[in-house]
Length: 462
Image: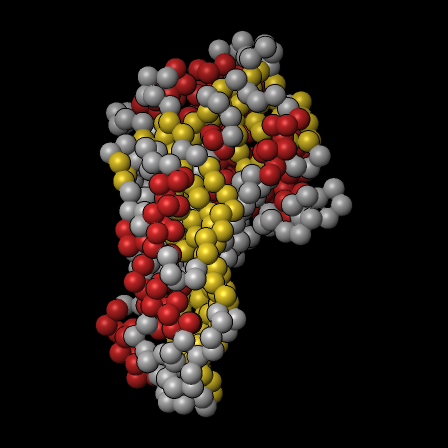
């Protein structure tokens, strides 16, 4: 029986396992004893390891920071790097985000495409190979990461305690093979407000919105004090600008709710930033003079609804990887201070210093301070690298698609080790659903990527 036939016979099992793992809410949470990233991620890791053990794989749990499952013999190891954690679900889902319901041939749920569905596909691809009895010359190991969406502490811990695979792919991006990933920066823009606003005009009390720097925020709200109604202004503005703003008025107290569309922070043009659209609207009002109003003006002058950082000093681009991406993911503003959390994806020919120096020039005399939290340098593997060539051959044989390898703005575990690239699961032309509401993976694609990964593992390990 060939690999594709084996996978077709396991179709119901693959669907069932995907549904089960999606039902585990594995959002990073407060650590507990022996649960460094919280109970949900712990339970998800246990599920993956137990499922692997039931397939006859040799498993290892690295102190609940990560784990792996493997089979085969040989000195060299072919790795698959997956992650079991997910970003927060956000709002306004059509189906329950952890219900794992099937509608129109699609499994809906947070993590369906990023990265639980692909993780299950890779695991069953390994099972198909093992059960086939095909002779391999290398071990195959799947590594289950647990903190990919917010810090990478899990994979870092794993690599301090276990030898890295000799080569690997991660099913956490797009097809065909990804031979380059942009650099990633996560930082805050902070300012303490020293001067109180005067009592004239619209007084801003607080603005709060967003979940993570690497998500386009789908909700933000502003609390204001103003003696006149804002209803007419908001009605006119929303109609003219095609945005969703809602107003609650209680005498002079106002709450403006801004509704956007969630998306991955590397693809802000796929969403609608609820923070930015709210602040742009606030900039049209007669705000009380003071440092909060100055910050609103700065935001609208230097960020506004832009995606590419052109007005804030970092509008870089190159031929290989395209434009820099600038995403505001979180805002927390009150009468005393503001913190803006930003995620930047910069081109592979630029550096961290290029970006930060450009931004800091625009911050001169504003009182705004940049505090850097995370940096991942860009990666690039030549198209003629053996790993790229083998993955591309499998993809082309399976799909007939002759396109070349690509560079992306997303950041994957391919950065964690040498000789690793991202490979799938999203096919060209399909909607990017990672970090968005109503995330799903189609059952057709779930089975298709299982077959592709089985053949890819065979080619890399034979």
